[in-house]
Length: 359
Ligand SMILES: Nc1ncnc2c1ncn2[C@@H]1O[C@H](COP(=O)(O)OP(=O)(O)O)[C@@H](O)[C@H]1O
Ligand SMILES: [Mg+2]
Image 1: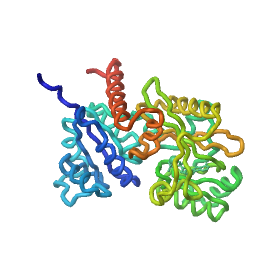
Image 2: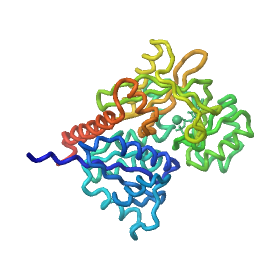
Image 3: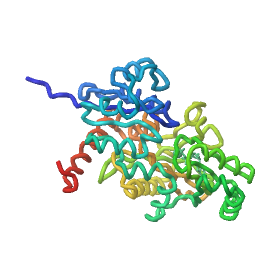
Image 4: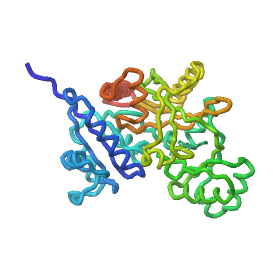
């Protein structure tokens, strides 16, 4: 009897993003947990300069417990030349590249062009969810609650700082949050309590993106919901983040180690259900697929839930919120990986049913 050929899963990680190191950790967990009796792992690391390493070079990095994808020998190839050979023979791709050039639709576009099925959101949903300004516009269009916000271009901030501060102070009261529209892992996010802090916060956000967001601060509990599925998505139990710092900044997320996750979040049953339904509605509103972690700010006093953001490639280590919430609902980490791969193939098949995509 011949054994069926194993599906070759390309696990893509690292890349040109501020969240490179986090991605390496997510990928290492994923590679350790994936069911190797079903899948052949093809590890594909991308360096901080955007060069794709071969599976062999990448394997050495995964085993060496390195913090970043780096090589002294890029094989003489530039970033573009290294793409096609790396992806050759991959049956399905599993991108765990957080942030820019991974979670923002660019990698998804490449995989579409190469006709490779992939885990997670498509080009459009990835791009929308990477741009907090657009994502929030869509939430509002769909009648979903999200904190009030204003958008300022970096070029405007650089040339007319006085006007920007004046506009913010007219529209919002302190404290407010300032963040890059495109970002993640809280990089470039600050809380401002007066004009001086506002100016510093805008300068900081401007290091990360050309579009700056100022948001009304919510005195909030941070509640998260994992969503899984394509056209008929399901919502997980809820989790709560207890940040170690005064907000859930980069330090609290990855460095201090003392932020806690409470699963399930302690909330009245109807509130839990309301939030889960909002998570599904938000997932559908941006036409997300596969997975998405929907984050809420829950007003401590009124318990009003506000949608904060959807992460289309959430932290994916075995102790990250996204898989933890599924585990609490009875779906183990390896089973979750399995489900995501099946959903990727299902979505690929569904797309190819359309006349717009000639076979
Ligand atoms: N409007 C807000 N009110 C209160 N806290 C906020 C607000 N916006 C952001 N935060 C805090 O900053 C953190 C990071 O902001 P977020 O918008 O989630 O950016 P990122 O995409 O980098 O995770 C949140 O987890 C929360 O702790
Ligand atoms: Mg966040």
